[in-house]
Structures are given as structure tokens and as C-alpha cells.
Amino acid sequence: MNTPTDDSLDDRLRKSDPAGRGVKVPAAQRSQSPRNSNNPLRDWWLTTSRRARRSLVGGVGVTAAALVIVAGALSPANGPLIVLADSPNPQPAAAGSSAVSDSKMMMMPFVNYEYVAGDNLSTSSGRGHVYRLNLNGTPESVLQRAATYFGVMGAPQKSQYFDPNWPTYVVGPEDGTSPSVTVSWTGTGSWWYSNPAAYPEQACLHEHRVGKGSDAYVECTEYEPAITGLNPSESETRRLASEFFKSMGVSFDVADITVMVDEWSSFASIAIKVAGHPTAIEWSMSWSGNGEISWAQGNSVSIVDAGEFGTVSDAAAVDRLADWRWFGSGPTNFQGGMRLMKSSVDAGFGVSEGDVAPSDASETTEPADPDTDPTAEPSSEPTQAPAPVDTAEPEPTDTAAPVVEPSDSPTAEPTEPEIPVKTITIDKAESALLLVWDASGDAWLVPGVALTGVDSWWQTVITLVDGVIELPPASEPIPID
Image (cartoon, rainbow, N blue to C red; front, top):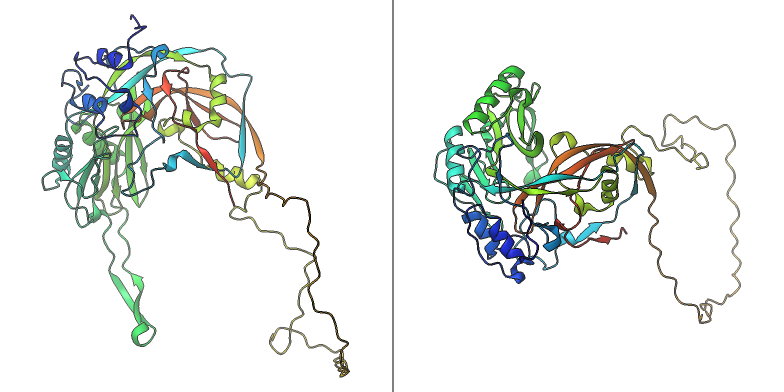
């Protein structure tokens, strides 16, 4: 594939359009805030012809196969392919919020982690494919198909929480009184079904009146037993989930379905695979203990190959762990972080459950009073007579405040708290495709690696060489009081 060497960014973006069309993108708008509703680049992708945005399967589905459309590669030497959003999963700004983005601020950690590459990590660079995720269909068509499957009545309409930067549509009520289906028409076109009937309100068997007068209220002391155990078994969950995934157009292997069952619920999910790699794009559904489907969720995207690019080595990727901007969402098996609390405890920042704080042996304990403590032993020692009261007039004293001489030394500045450093050796790495969001609200899958080591959890890092993506501004740490 010939790589352009002197085209402008908007020209190269236009040329990468499989439909051969596009728009001129002013430089000012390429640097605007995420999901600008007037961004022609975003409008271009959303209105590209059906041929250019050909779905790998019909309807609202997304396939697990690796068949993609090659759209052409952009040269990092001539500008970034992706301008990352300020946060891994951007959300719309609230109305009237400050112009300063909270994503520019980062809480100062209780522990600073220093990551060191182990000797067994590869030092060889490589290459990997980048995939652009295009919204597939329309929000109305996505909602209608999901609503038909779950039997939700009504027509698609804008949600009461609709935001131009975060367009949301719904079928059914939004007050939780009956089932509904909602879609967020950005990123992966994620939609979700919610069924409040799966969690029925329990009847009160016994009531107790508490208090008197206007302060009195009725308290329930016993509820009817919750219905459990009616959710499908493991094999039935797998079968029902397979029917759901197939009806939504998802291509998958039954063996890849993750199933979890207990007496309270049943859960099934499938991670979409691209080029044999599972991704963070998942379809899932769950049943409650009364046998009802409680919720389900899916996506509506087609996957387009945006080209092959250089990647850094696993050892070099370790250096990026200290910078959150290189993070990308990996598949479920690489999503961790629960050891953070343990590490904080190990570093001396708290007592974990089950730990008992040692008592101070030097602390003086007041003797028990036999008049107030029935367990106290009476003392056989005679009570000491009170000391005589001195009735003499006290000598006059000077109560004026002492004079403080001015000092030439400056006032001492408050010192910042010293944050302990914990060194972690990374000795295991596995390649992965990572989900990231760009500044226009669109989603991409990029080459990455999952890293872990002793006393660490899986962490996912983008491995694209410098220049393919543009990182957001670095965060300013918020000091801890």
C-alpha cells in the first residue's frame, strides 16, 4: 500500500473513505472539544454511504469474525490518525458546568507505583492493525429490533436525557414502571434493555409502629421471602443466550460464551472477536431469581480496517504505565484493579477488614467505679481525706501578654505530603486489541498489550508508536489535604 507523504490531514481522511466522498475539515474544528455537534468530520462518518459502512452482518449486530474493509492507512509522519478524548470513556458535559474539564484534573495517589520491565519481556518492536468502529444503522432501527425481541411496546423517541453531544433514544417509559430499551448513538452504539418486573417489590408481612404523635411511622419487620432459584440453569442459560445472540446477528462460538449461575441470577456474555482477539465490545444478558430477564445489552457497529502501523516492544510499553493517557479498555479477562486497595493497605494507608488496630499499652485505664459499675470489686483501702482548702488571697500576677519581637525569617511554607513509592516488576505480557474513544466521540480498536507482575493486576497499554495517535493534555494532580 502506498503511503501519502505530503497530503493534508483532511485530504487524507477524504481519501481513506471507501465511498470516495468526504468533506473539508477546518483545522479549528479538528481541535475542538469532544463530540462537537457541528464537527463535519463526525457528520461525514455518520452519513457515509451504506456501501462504505457495510455491516459484517445485518441489523444491529456486530460480528466476531475478522472480515473487515480495508480503508487505507495514514502516515504518522503527516499527522495523527486518532486524536484521543480527554477520558477513556467520555461523557457529555452537564448543562452550565464549568468550562474547565474535570478530566484535566487527576487525584494525587496514595501510593506512587514505579514499574520496571522484567528481563523476560520482549524488546522487539512490531506492527499491528487499527480498526475504526462505524455506527451501523440508525438509532430508531436499533431500538425497534431490540424492542421487538423483548416485547417492549412503543415508538422510538428522544430520551428525556438527550444531549446533542450524547444523543440518547428510548422505547418505553424511563420512570422504571415497565420495561424499556435505550440506545446511546455514539461510540459503539451501545443499547440496553431493562426490566423492573425482574425485581418485584416484596410485600410486608408484619408492621410495627414506631414513635408517637407526628413523629410516628410504620416500620416493616418482616417481608415475604424473595423468590429465588427460578432462573435458568447453566446449560439453559447458554442455550437461551445463544438464541439471543443469533437473533441479533452476532457471530460467535458457543464455547466462547461466559456463563455464571447461582440461586439469585444467571448471566451470559460474549466478547466480540476481531482477528482472533477478544475485545471489550460485549453482548450480555441476565436473569433474576424469579426467572425473568432482568437486563440485556448490545452494540451496533461495523468494523473497518484503518491500516497497519508500527508498535513498540512489550518492555517499552512498561514505561507507558505511569501515564494514564496510554490506557485502552481491554477484554474482560484483562480488566482488573481490585488489588489497588490491597496495595494501599500494604503501604500503610488503612486497615483492611479483619485486621485489628493494636492497642496502646501505655494508655492509662480509669479504675471502675463500684457505684456505677456492678462488675467492679469494692476496694478495701480507706478513702483518702480531701486536702485542706487554702483561703489565703493569691499574690497579684501580671496578666499582660508577653511581647513578641518581630522576626526577619519568612513564614515556613506548608510541606506537601510525602507519597510512598512501590516498585513493581512487570514480567508477563499478552497482546490485545484495546477500545479507545477519540475527541469526536467515535470508537476505535488499537494494538495494545496487557501487562502484569508480582503484586500487580492486569493493566492494558496502547502500543502504537508515537505519532499515530495524539494524546490529550496531561492531567494536573489534585493535592490531598
